[in-house]
Length: 135
Image 1: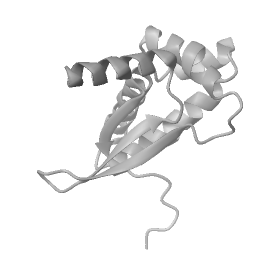
Image 2 (image 1 turned 90 degrees about the vertical axis):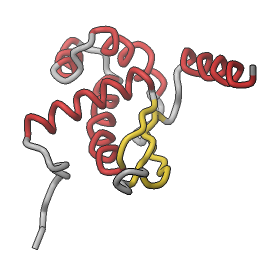
Image 3 (image 1 turned 180 degrees about the horizontal axis):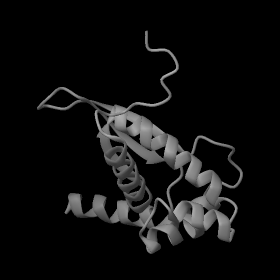
């Protein structure tokens, strides 16, 4: 029986799993939307939600705790100055997972993990992308 399994090991050793989550969370905060497998998205969602909750209080301690996982200073600053203020009124549920079907090669369930509210810069870049596709 598989009782009380607290997380998905993702078929990786602990160091590899930690690095995977750190990289994917950093990418999520950089691009505000990533496409990955459903299992990875669920694990990354847990980490990202906790980071956003901690980033809502901008203190030295919270910056240091999050800086243990996010090594990129620009992304760390973006989290505290742009992303976390969007969610001050929200008590959780900062990200959403949208299922996109199965991957062609191995039929893995794919999903898009994105922030519920997007920053102003990403909205402008989305409009530019749509205009470029039309042209």
